[in-house]
Amino acid sequence: MADLAPDYFTFTYPRRSSDFCLRAVRPPAAVFGVADMIGHPRGLRWRNYMHVMNRHLGHAIRTSPPVDVAALTDALREQLMWHSRQIHNFRVAHDQAAFGFCLAMATLHGTDCRVLSLGDCRAYRVRRGDVDPATGDRRFEVNCLTRDHNALGEAVGRDSGFTLFQNEMIEQTKRLGAFLGLEDDDLVARLLGEAVTPVTLTPDDCLFLITDGIYMPHLRAQMDAANFHLSTATYYLESWLQNLFSAADRRIRAAGGDYWPEMGTILVEETLRHTARRRKYLDDMAITGVYLAPPE
Image 1 (cartoon, rainbow, N blue to C red):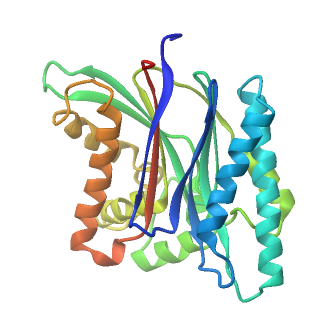
Image 2: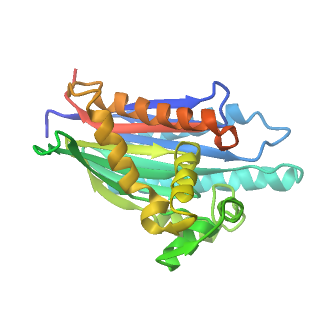
Image 3: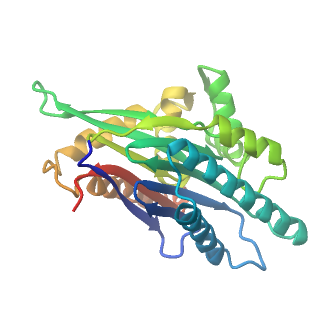
């Protein structure tokens, strides 16, 4: 895979979304991410803050180029811990402000990748398989690489399945167990270490980093269809995403450089189509896709 290099696409919605994408690239090192802002702080131009985070990530890569993906991941964790303390200090100084971030991040050094998360942003690895000769549909393997740090994610991890009404589900998703800016530094540091998942990208893979605005409307719909029964399989939507990408593949069979960006577009379109009928499900959203492509 020496002739392949990481490429990416990003998307946020709406124009002034409180969800945003992070990226810093200096080959062979790269950092990508999505973040979902918690609260709407007064006295802080938070859009400027997200640019500060991006600049700091880029500066860390340029001034001390990491020798491998482990060193890059360590550098990212140090940056995130620093920002977590800054955000917490702002909250203490302005106690009227609720402010923090959920995030899903990926570090890459060549094709070696590490994924980490805080809160309820997610990372999925989507692997494109062969076409089934019987049906003509392409097979996809979808794996959620992260686990949600909220009350609902913890409940799903403890139990193989249970019934939960929509209002209960929404309440539990709001009870976050971790986010950037949390007062407990030790907990943030521990989770940023425990949540690291090693991934090796292949030419048939795409890493989707998404905020809850992308997946939550479909999770609610799946719960409706299952009569409010929630299981690990339903919660992380892996089978649903496999079917979505299999159907989408029929629309974009040409496996060119735009294949994975087109897949990301279809996922966003499906979310917007779904929320057009259920406006209460609509939320800000951000998505970053990372895949291998031939260098230009």
